[in-house]
Length: 198
Image 1 (tube, rainbow, N blue to C red):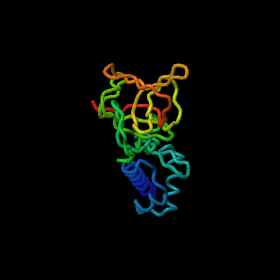
Image 2 (cartoon, helix red, strand yellow):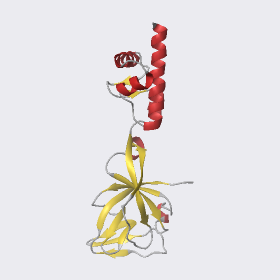
Image 3 (tube, one colour):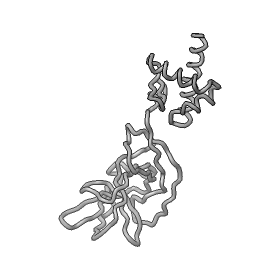
């Protein structure tokens, strides 16, 4: 009986690890039962036993094995939404190209989206053509933030937000380009991270 239990527990752990690799979430007890062929009541009993002896973490819903725990834990889905010019302004259409899961431990939570950087006006800030820029959706910016700004009739751009008194302008991080003075612009988000290829 002990040998059968150990084999069943091994099957459960293997299934949880495989499921986590594919789905990036922990499977439910029902999914484990269906995937392993072990009756649900037995799965629940085994999960409880494994949690008690420290083989897994189990809170009654989420199963965390040593492997899935090391795989990065909780993730958040983030849409890649087209591109953003880092140069002259242009109108862009918002279209989700792909959804990716980013680890919460590195990138945090909230309303996030990714944009492909286009152009060279932000190279001084470490943002190069083709980089993915992670944006936190916000309608306000602090002086010095790198923002996605929308200017009516001209489109979106990625620049540093600068404010002196009542004067606001968008500052490129490349001496080839000039500041863009603004009376009013709509902030769509603030850059929080850059993901780049080497």
